[in-house]
Length: 112
Image (cartoon, rainbow, N blue to C red):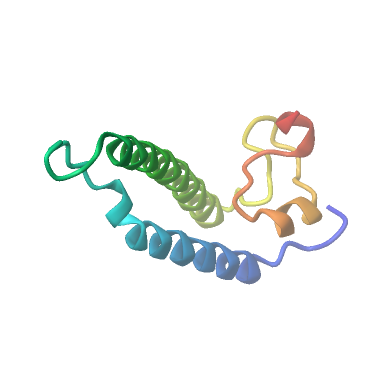
């Protein structure tokens, strides 16, 4: 590798990203609640908007949970000593790629 991996810095960035995602998930909980379907209280268009908002919130939650799993997997690679190596081919991941996304599990060649 052209340079040495800053494991401490990577762990810090991973931890910050995890906290940020967890805070966003917590703050967006309200948008994922079931939509009230009582027509006497909420109009049809309002219900449709609420259902669409809920669907978007659930998809966003799903993507954030995937990102959290990627972060946890990166922490496991740090523990095992495999951090910085592609999980597909075993080659070293470029430092710039790790700096951009410390949770990335693959090198640029395997990503494409």
